[in-house]
Image (cartoon, rainbow, N blue to C red; front, side):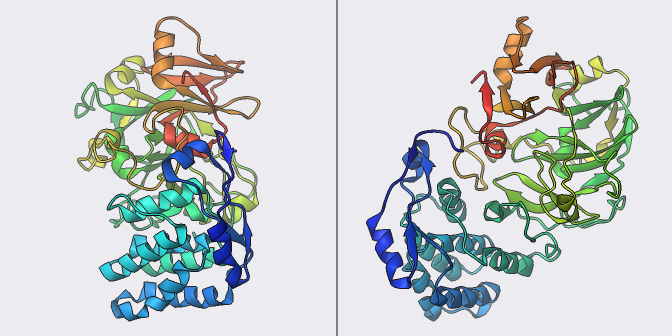
Length: 456
């Protein structure tokens, strides 16, 4: 359920366009008023399968998309048919093709057809992102065979994704390409050079005393398991984005999404009988500007924010990984709190330390996210957790830190926040660690659209 006043706007012209194709028009998708204010009213969307003429047009377009070198502007009949179809669902695949279009004339034709079928005018030169934001914000449904077409496009340009693009609980409409190939290296062979975001398995660590390369104010993601502490510096997580590690006698998978400011940790041991330890890798794909991770052993996709398997054998078993708390802190405070902490070694950092919020993405995420819950700004830091009743809650970090520093309590239902090593951790009523983590508001709120907000 989305927030705000739900508007249903009928568009007579859209219904008329659907009629000649034998399609049944339905009311536009229900969207909040803040979406209408930013993106306008959504178009009418027909129900049922796409027409026979559109099936032929889409099949032709698949060939054109994969052979742009031989595509000619004289083939615009296909685009004209799509643009005048009155079926906004077709814009999804046009958007997907735009991400991979390298021929300017082909990209122009895609953009023109997509904007016409949606009834919009683009306002920026970031056409693919702006167009996709409209589709997401309006929650335009896809059409039958969309996943087949999308798979055809992505696997044509990105070998190795064939086993990723399968039916399941992933909303494939929202999935886009992040710009790098899949990390398909086998477990514990992350020494193999790859043209990917290079995960690391069983990383080398040093003592705090030997980590002279870290400055006091460097950001670290701290984890404590069975009394054993380890710091994962942001300089390393920015380039690795995925670590498979063992800490305190437990196996962990630790994804970090640079785009949404979220480092998380999942226990990958103690699983039901017959399930091998998942070895997490980065697919190179994004879902609303959040990394899409998968298990190299079963090729199952897992939700980065919830740890729930979405496709493949792990989804068939209903696997949900238990989350461990990740405390976002600075190096000085972390090592003073945990003097026996270990820390990943400098050579894993590869010389990079970006804060996307204050550099490239300063004006908002450059990858499509659609609408963002307006209660906070997109890059506001929150600490998210699930309560005992199953309700998600986000604590505004700045407000919670100030309250706790003044001696006040920060409580929501059975969840209590505490200050630890310069960061925040959520505990249950019984004092049990609930497995919380910090993230940007846009990311937490999109994966938990019904989330409560403390300190907003």
